[in-house]
Image 1: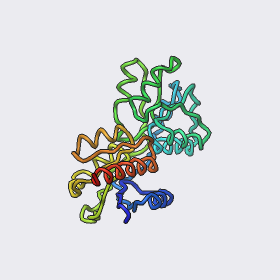
Image 2: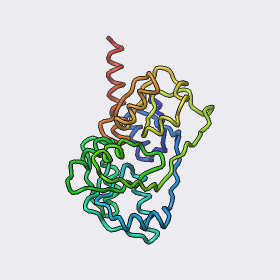
Image 3: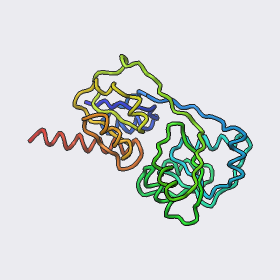
Image 4: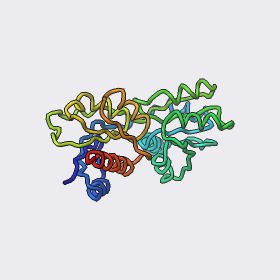
Length: 242
């Protein structure tokens, strides 16, 4: 019998098939929706004039928003360095011909420390969302690195009807701190089930909001989340047999 796993974002077909092979039934319950904004001329002119030493991306949506600037015909001067929070974000940049440095741990603090350790960087522009976390900006500013935050997308709660939540869920996947907050009290409907975080930052927010077992994936991907869940389920099954 397949375990039913709830994904708080829309799963791709290959992720659904992968889950099935691993013994999971992956169902969708997206709690966030995204809209991209076009920065105004004044913002873009400022970016062009300041010519920061580095571009910083903390999500694939940030990359998508950045590329829409190119669609407007505004091509910023390529900086000395480009930084991405993780391999998925770096891969998205690579699709457009940009190579980015990636921190060993996929969170804003590790990324900030990577930037601080680069003596060639004195200023950055962060292509971010409206719900960005502040640790990256705080750390860089403390080290006298000038940070310009350019909001290129908005993340909003999708407000899916709670009454439509399936009752037979065995685990929930969370992809960002925002997804944890958007899911909110709906988590209380499920008793004694594990929750899976895509990374340590999301895991920290989960621990602050629930007393359920929090599983953290080794890599920021659905595959890694499912593998971590499978390992947890196997260990629990073996422990119950004793």
